[in-house]
Length: 219
Image 1 (cartoon, rainbow, N blue to C red):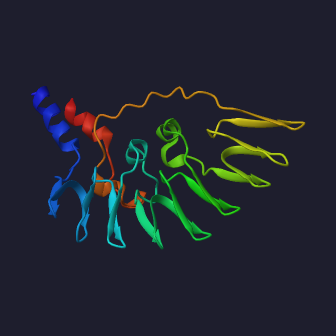
Image 2 (spheres, rainbow, N blue to C red):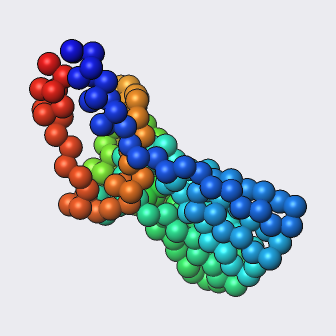
Image 3 (tube, rainbow, N blue to C red):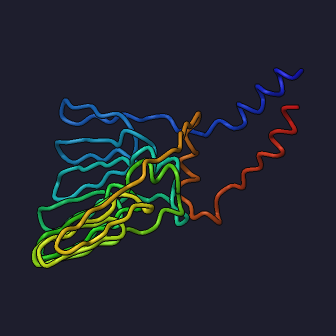
């Protein structure tokens, strides 16, 4: 009886991962998710959490990192592809400036422009696993033509340095900047991917998980 209840619980908790689809164009076959095809090309995202877009007759696809998939932001996990002229970028928090376009790889990343350069920076995977939707927004700092992004950034006249984690620290002594990041002590293991339809939603619209009821059913 206990094994039966456990089996039912596991089946009930398994996310509804949609099946992949395949498309064919001009002797080329692509399989995956969110497939897009042009006259002579077809491409698909590798996961149901990804996205594809077509610009100027070419198809571009993007898949979020595993950390972002398992720890989506409160506003939902919604990657995008954008184009500016002949340039295309896919990801999150995309920035268009100085005739260029760039996107962060995770929803917790930032993009900034400085002296015509577009720089995108993302927190470490371990930071996202540890803090999830509470991951602090990184900052960017400039000095002359230099730019750096991260946490607790410090600068002098020509140099900028930032910590790689929210708990990191940077100190400026005379003209020297030193940064330190404590190691992550978290071990994060996921047994099942989240429901693709749920992670796209804002947090307040997601299905409420009730682990207490699940535990009771397994007893």
